[in-house]
Image (cartoon, rainbow, N blue to C red; front, side, top):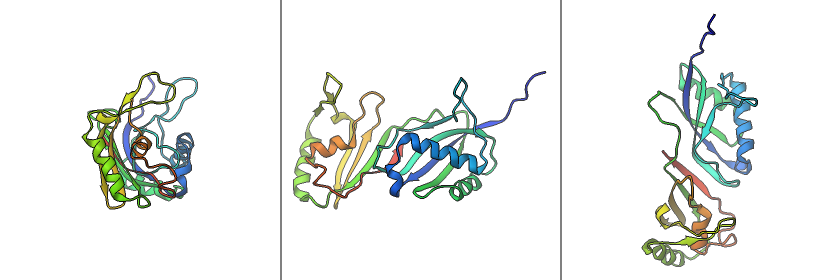
Length: 212
């Protein structure tokens, strides 16, 4: 007798990771999400193999200490009827600093989750704006900017990966291309503008958007 197949669906979840939860590492975040999903009664579809795990996929892990206002993940679950009711249930069972903002049911035509770019902002009010603007414009006018990373012999040109970089009041805003091989890090942008840890002490790096 053939085993009856269970109806599965893939959902895309937009969520916010804020407040003290920004100090939670990615693996701990995954464990927290699993507990919330199970408390909600959500049927999780597991991977195959000796150590099955819920079939979830993230755009790119946040660095510890960063806030994520619009993070995204895909999750394969049993059939659901109402994404809005599920969102409300998840928020009822969530923990402080983690808010579920949107849930969409994906059809088979939607490709696997893959980010195209990330938007960040950080307050730089403790540094003279003119000083930042000069260095910012110099970088944008350049055709290349090479950085050396630990563990890599070759330098990496990050200039093509910076899609937008601007100063809006006291907020430094940047849009960085997502790259599987040599993505640019927001901290590298701070370094090239000579914004050391001391110069923006107390400011928090925020990832405002994950663009797909």
